[in-house]
Structures are given as C-alpha cells and as structure tokens.
Image (cartoon, rainbow, N blue to C red; front, side, top):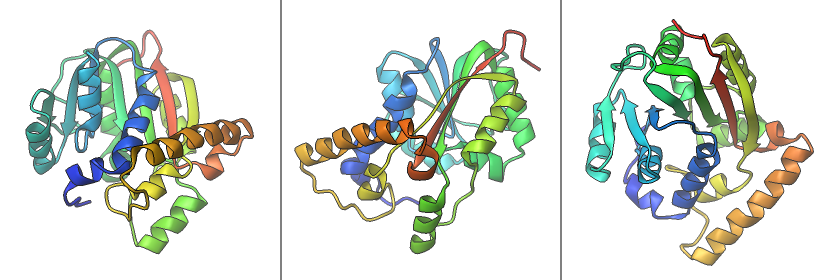
Length: 237
C-alpha cells in the first residue's frame, strides 16, 4: 500500500495512536535483541531503540527501508526476506510482527516464515503478534473506503502460535475509536491538532477498552488484537 507523506500523518493524531499501539506490545518484550519483522515505516524500531533495546527492523521493500534509514538514521534497518532471514540461529529474545502478520500469512510462503521465526529466536523467546482484528466493523469500513488488504484473524493467530509450539502468555484486544478517528495513514483525520483533545480521546478510549474486554466484546468491537507467545524450552528447527 502506497502511503503519501507518512511523516505528516504521524504528526497528526495518528502519531499518538501509533505510539499507543507500540506501548501496548512493548510491555511484553523480553531480553535485549529484538527483531521487528515487517517494520513498515520504522516507528516501532525507533521507539524500542530509544528505550535501550538492540532492535533490527526488516522489510522486503527497498523503498520502505530507504525511507526508514533517512527518517531514523540512528536505527538498524535491513532489507530482508522473511522466508530466508539473514541472522544466526537463536539470536533474538523477542520477535515482533506488528501489523505485518496478515501480509506474511497472505503474501508469503508462511510455512517458511514460521520456520525462520523459530530458527532465529532463542529458546524461551517471546513472539508477538499485533494485527488488525478483522471483524464486522473493519470489514464494513474497508468496503466503504474500498480498502483491500490481506487478513489473518484472531483465531488464526492463536492457531499459528500453537502450531509454532508456543505457550500463549497473553492475549487481548485494543483500540475502539481512536484509529478510525485518526484515519490511520490513508484515511480522513477527524481530530484537530490540539493536544488536550487528542489525549482526552485516548484517555477515554483506554477506559472503554477495559469495559469492553471485561464484557468479552473485544473480538467484536476492537480494531486490533495482541497475542503474545513464548517458545517452549526445546522448540526449534
């Protein structure tokens, strides 16, 4: 998906929503060496690098990596094929697929991708899936906006973790209305560039998220899911 002027979008409300997503998954990191698979525009790699982690962001698209290197020159970005990762065995403590799982699942040889994730991650490593929670709301909005994308729903993500012989140590849902209000990278932004309004939206959303998840309605109402798995001691290839 071609994104025009992403740096401008990140300076709007979407930038805060983007940071919220990163923070929600960063609580489950372990160790120092981290792989950000399908790093996109580099915000996750940048955030975690500034937090003191040794992060490598990879993407198969050379233009994307060029953008990341220019925008975040202090970070480590590499062009890499997820089916043949250029890293040594058992190097990473955490592997993150943020808004990338559905692309690997639908556009790559996912059997090879799974094998590579297991190969380059340490025993007891964390594997984190953070992906669009495809439900009736998202399907409807995509139809209205004519936005087509690959899908890997929550149930499939859980199945993938089990296929990788990972113990699921955390799973939940988040983001109720901040993402559609922000427009993401390509949609209409409905929120003015006024900090207190932006922060108020996120504050109230966090409150409603807790209620929605507690009522068991996260799968139906939220825009993102988070699944955290931990490799068992002797899992590997």
